[in-house]
Image 1: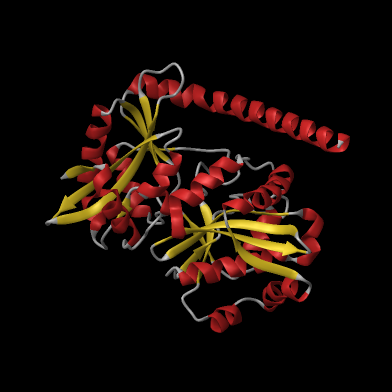
Image 2 (image 1 turned 180 degrees about the vertical axis):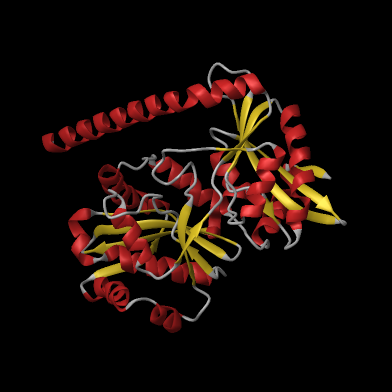
Amino acid sequence: MLRRVGPDDAGQFDKLIQSSPEPDFAQTAVWAKLKSVSWRPVHYSYDQGGGPVIAVTVWLRKPPLLPWSLGYAPRGPVLLVDDAAQYLPHFLEQLREEMRRQGVFALKIDPAWTSKQRAKTLEEIGFERVVSDHPFGGTQPRLTFRLDISADEEELLATMPKKTRYSIRYPEKNGVDFRLGTKEDIPLLMEALRDTSRRKKFLERGPEYYERLLDSMGDQASLMLALHEGQVVAAGVTVVTGKIGWAVYGGMVREFANLRGYYGLNWRRMLWAKSRGAEVFDFFGVPVDYSEESPLHGLYQFKKSFGGELIEFVGEYELPIRRFPFWLWRNFSPWALKLWRRFSAFLRGRKHKETTEEDSEK
């Protein structure tokens, strides 16, 4: 039976996600609260045998000019017990009817599943595979490296390639200091992120987003900084849910690349995640095209260098609930999104130019 989870039970809902065999921070109520500025989250659990076996957070948002909402369950649903896959067909049918009652025209999901059998179940219900030209394979990365960090510190370091161990130790030997930051250090984080996003053309967010993230996640998130003579070298935000830690946001200042600060930073992010109970560290995505010709090959090589396992998730799927608006969405939204991305890139470039000109006048 599908049951909607109210605000008073949000804490218990998150405990279910955290204790599941395959937890994901993107499905928690606390993460949904962070995103509720632009989306309206709703939470559900599916109960069988006297207890919940599946949970899902769906974010709802009305696209422009449409009276219906798009539903999106990032990295959901989450199977809460080992044998929950058997209940997926009935759960998904009930979820479809609930989404219809919520005025949803399509439900998009990209679960953190690797099982081809589960993907087949989605297709049997009526979900359609989404083909994306995004360099990471979709809204959420389809490929990632995951590293077992359950061993003690010395053992864990010993499992890494010799060159990586050298790079982890190098920055501290050359005057780089590492420390946990607070909201007051977000300008330093922004400096590292902006330098990286301009080079890699990644999405830029404002400092207020990261302030809300640290407020919302509390001790489930950390800001880690690498500093050299007071200058930021690298910075990153790490999130832990259950037994997994994710390197969700991070960047480095190219000027200090020779100090290898991002190696040392990621090592300390792992140690922080371990201190919060994590047994696995997720490097949060690599490009689907990681060939030597890819402009993102260096990112792939960096994350691979820590010795983790390359994981491939099943990818994005969409379930049409109202056919005509779904057809409009499928056929016209890609063009609209491309135009929006170009416009956003233009605005970011203009803002950067104005900031540079202001700095030069000072």
